[in-house]
Structure formats: structure tokens, C-alpha cells
Picture 1 (tube, protein in one colour):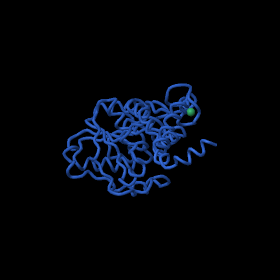
Picture 2: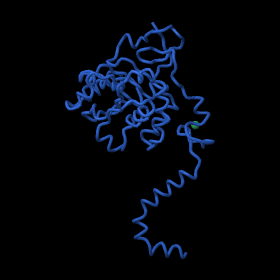
Picture 3: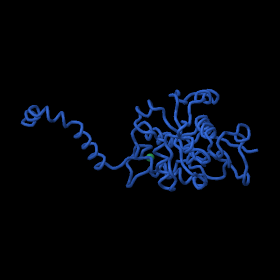
Picture 4: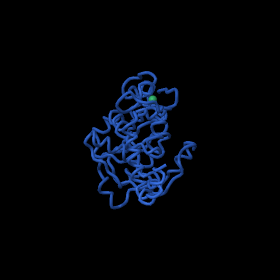
Length: 265
Ligand SMILES: [Zn+2]
């Protein structure tokens, strides 16, 4: 009861301290409580990352895959074989690689990372990407994160692709170029759109500002994004970079959508 009186008397200073106190409490809880698996929310036995069950279900993309698009094959067709997608509709970029298939575990990770303020997942996801994209990174002069429109950046507070590119760049010793690619308009979310609608949605949405053309010209670049679905976004980005004089553009993403059955020709 004394505490209630005391709290009432100190209401004003306490309310001024409310935000820092809340932050301190959150920090204390984060330290005191065992870390949770970012996918299933079960407590982790120790350390960070995924729990053993989610880790075992994660679908890492390994060779054999299409040398151009990185789409995994169900059997090894021999070196240099292309997927039907790469032959039927070759993209503007040269090669694409992804760390994992976009399944339930990958979706949970990306959702928490992107919308759940879990910037702390970037080092783990970036490490997997650096491994999956090592050939691309070895050839690269710089990494270019797919930019957000400033309004979306304002709402989300960080660009998830830049956070991933920063981790990969730190691991591989390759610089990250930000600002060389600008998102000219806030395109609607690609979710739920057909392949053609996705391409129309991002058509002309990216540009290299004239003052950045010298940073891009003649350079070998790796575009970095979180998820590749139809590839329309990274294809539009690659076209803008190539128009500005980039020598070569590859794509490295955390997760890519893969149809259940892949065939080769
Ligand atoms: Zn888990």
C-alpha cells in the first residue's frame, strides 16, 4: 500500500523515465530468459540460431543445381546443365544463388527478421548466404542490396537486404554499395501476384542516379535480397545496373521459391 502512495507521488518523474525503464526491463528479460528458436519459438538449449528440430527441417540448397539460376535439380545431370527456366526466359542477371528453399522454416525466419524487429538474425542468415554464394562473391567488386522505397524504410526502420549484405561483406571482405540503386516508387507488395503482374509491378521501379553511374560502371556486382519468388524485382534491378554500365550482375538471396519437382533438358 505504501508502494501505491509512493508511486502516485512520483508519477511525473516515473512517467518521464517510463521509456528508458521499459527498454531496460526488456533488455533484462532478454538476458534472463533463454533465447527462443526464431522459427518455432521453443527455448534453445544454448547459444543462438535454430533449434535442432527446425535445423533438421531447413532445406539448404546444395549442388546439383542450374548453373545459371541456382534452381536445384533432383538428380545430377552433369556439369553446366541449365534449367528449363534459364533457357526459356533468361534473366538480365548472370547467375543466382540462394541459401535455402522458401519453405515454412525459411518463411518464419524471413517474417521475424523483416517485420518482427529481429535484426539479430542477419548474421546467421548472412553466413548461410555467404556460403551459398561463395563463387559469386569471389568474382565480385561490390555487393548491392535491393533498396526499399524511403516510405517503407521509414516504416520498417531498416532495409533487410542491406543488413544481409553488410554481414556477407564483412565475412568476405567485399564492400557494400548503398545508394547506387534507388527505388523510384513504392511498388505494391509482390505477394499474391502472377509472374506477369510481378514483372509489370516493378517495371521501371529502380534507377541508378546519374551521380552514382561512376560507382557502377565497369564493376562486377552481386545484388542481395531476402527472397526470390519470380525474380522480377532482381531482374529489374539488374537491368538498371547494366544500363548504368555495370560489367556483370549476379544475384544472391537468402531463400528462393522452388517448385516441388525440377526437370532438366
Ligand atoms: Zn525451432
